[in-house]
Image (cartoon, rainbow, N blue to C red; front, side, top):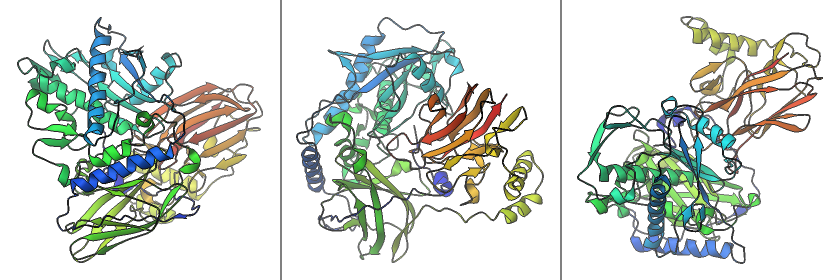
Length: 607
């Protein structure tokens, strides 16, 4: 399952996007209650959710509804055949997931029809896509490849820039006569704008088998010991996996819930092992999954559930100022000012120790109005360092996240920025590397540093006579990036941790730093035949960051990538014969450019 923010990422992240201040909205949290050993009373949670629902409804009053659907793709290998009962079986799976979300809304008295999957009448619309390769040729890291193949083969039905897409992969195979092997993407990421989630399928995935405790299944997953369990438990785990990854697709974080929500018989869907207990009570499991109040609050304004048009970009600017903590003796009070155009309707605060997985985020929700600065009462946390997520929810469906380090001392607490590391001293770094054993990596880093410290004049691609030329060594006409400054063959000097260009743990000597929104343009004088590059996000970007890459020749789009995220990359190799001016553009895909750490690697012109 996808981990949205790891301790490693906290250690390595080097900057957060600053947001231009428009004007101040002052907001106040007006619920003050005992916070010694605090767990949020159910009546307060219910009143926050009820008030939030009314705010979202008021925002959309007199707004025509639109049909914001979740599209479903079934991806399978070219060596596989679709079974005759696939449509009916997947109908049952999708219905079970939709009903789960419906029931979670109804737990709080909110009318909801469930997930708005794309339908024709009572039949779900499922787009089958046969892969270019056999099922065994794909693996857990093939998400980008699957998206690219789906984009090419779905006949225009799927647009990953605009749609929310559930991809069910039928890429299972049998290791032996009884053991299924699942080695395909299993993750989810998204927002109110778009999103994608992946989940695995096999013939035994069927909600009607949730009561089958007699029959057994054996299966293998990457990095796990082969497992055997009842067919009922398997369905609970894997249908729950679909619901969990779709939660990420809707923008939900990992969230263990609030202590007041946790009972011996319940477990948060988005928390540690929560996806393994889908409809657990049906087959006699000890726990049953639920969606936390924080998750439900966020879904309240999501276009797939409201049915209203997707967010208005002019309403999405939000900044957090003057954030501070004070120890009240029996708890901690968090204060801040909010700057933006549209007041949030609610805030959820997710906190977990840095030395634990974020699956254990403890969540608390707060109602907000527009009469003062926020004053958020937190419980008395033990001494230590924590990761903190502040998620402000806007009625237009946008959720604005702020990620911080929460440090608690014996008598004080403070909120810190994600550590950025010190700015790079190029000479000092070069000296330090020079005395190290000359591994291939060290040699490559020294070569990069020497080129940055002693740059040569960029070659003019319009007059250059060689057979090939890296654009990172070429004269540009325009160079603009969304953060920091344009850079050749390195990422940024803000921190040594991210100075070098790295993607999927591979170091590159040639490339352009292109934090979105960015553009690099070059005059070619129609002298070149091909352009090639590797594209992706630099390692250590946050999972919420994304970028799409566009190549434009003389004003015409020659290539556009799918949305790429950290841990992914794609290759471009395209004809540019007779092109006079070429532009390399990168932009975020979810309504923001937070952690959109785009890089063009080995961007090469050739004759």
